[in-house]
Image (cartoon, rainbow, N blue to C red; front, top):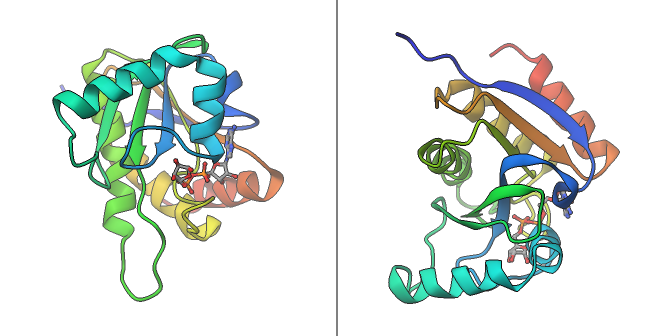
Length: 177
Ligand code: AR6
């Protein structure tokens, strides 16, 4: 049977308030926390998440989680079963790093599917501290998710922090697949 791509929904809000099977964190390769979404997830999710991140570093990622890859931990006190940590690329004007940004969405969905998640909430990866222009980041996110067929994931929810992020994703969703 051919798998279908997940339904894409948009929400304006804070990703740490979401109920979903998995919430994706825009992390950095240290896996030890930071600002933005990462800081908010660790603050609200509690120390269990950091403890699992530390254990993952010790067991698998001594040199850090490479850009474009994804790995899961507990979601601690968040309203989710899992947090999937992925490392977005820092935006560059001299080099096209779009494939790495697409990889973050694809790998996060692959990990979510392995965990049996049906609903997955994503922030706009790399569009904050890592400087990716929102319009381009939104197009890459939407295109990559549309191309993914990752049963049992049924819903991919983009959680956008402000009106301009929401508008960028709305516009990306309205353009033809
Ligand atoms: N819910 C939803 N979206 C949010 C939230 C939130 N609570 N907080 C910020 N955003 P960023 P990056 C938006 O900077 O660019 C960290 O220090 C934000 O407006 O969180 O991938 C990590 O440790 C922006 O549109 O992630 C890394 O070092 C988007 O989420 C680095 O930042 C992503 O912004 C990663 O930078």
